[in-house]
Length: 251
Length: 226
Image 1 (tube, rainbow over the protein chains, first blue to last red):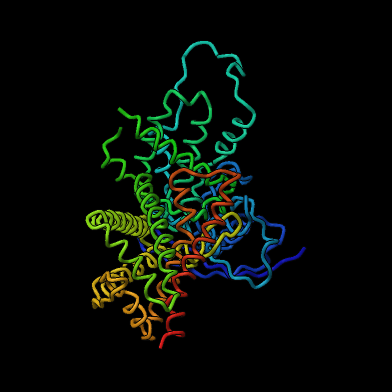
Image 2 (tube, one colour):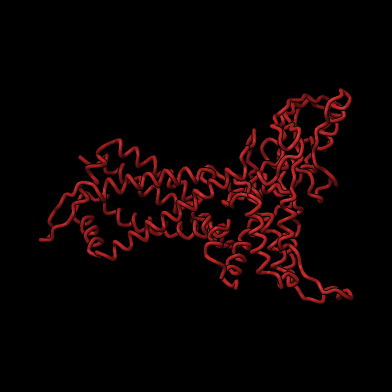
């Protein structure tokens, strides 16, 4: 089995109010077959064996669908692989002797809880503000009762593939949450089920996004580049159109 | 309609202002460059006649100037607001920076908009002071007395300091337009799989034409003038 030695610089921070810093670790016998998170597991095993404090990092499904993993690797959210979450990155990307810097998502709206774990509940509040549809109670409606064209369904699905990981915020030079918010607005604006709340949704979600302290969108499209689901900034453009219509038509 | 203050105060509305005022100023720059092509001529008459024609609009010109100043200030205010918001949204930056590449449109131009913008603003103040409020030379063409701005421009650009300052700052105007032009469409919600790549290319083209066209004037005058 091919192994390598890596020089890691990992952000360590005791809690929200502490000042953190990068701590250097040398990790030997890293297999090229490991995933990035397994590499961190091995480092944590080593730290525990030495009676050290293991590095806290978010993770859950480790197959790119839960949106929990959230590492900025050498300055790029989710690391160097396009269309992949941190958990889908594998160590074959790296070679012996590489130095890897690992930092948490950095945004005022995402306070660090510990080490590489940040509090992303600001996203939950944006969803609560308007990212829902109203349903009638009672018997389940027939499947496919509402006709939706293939192209519209496809585009809505592209937006719906957002896993809420917040890499868009982490990568944005302005720490804007536009891609996330736009993906949710776009998905529901495209589908007929989302139409009853369509106008008030965009106004409420944008207002909530602004009040959480995210920055403004400057169209760098760095969000699209790091998005593990490769969600296009065309959804941000749809959010701007939706906002324009809703703001003009509002009573 | 929502209260205007609420629309303009939102992150989305702020960028509508930025986009519309920016696009308006692109049209102004195109007209400005077209007129200034007359400066490439050593004959002062066509340029001064063009200037005299503009001045002959009288009050309409003054209204137009105030509209342009209002557009500029709205653009500057929204730009500064975005820059301050960016600082507040990420007070502590990444220890190591990186670029994702791929679909990203993050460039030197896009990340330096506030600096290229403020530099252009300072440039504008000096530019207007140098020429609009500069020495008033006069000349007579066919019995009509008019301002000889051509002489002032040619005189000014015989000074290498002015030439270097103009070339340097206008280069940054080019960078500003390179990210700014296509951005106006995206900020207004204009994004289409067929037209967006075209708009992006047109933006680069306009940036190069405007920057090169304006930069050429001081260089041309410096090397062909007395």
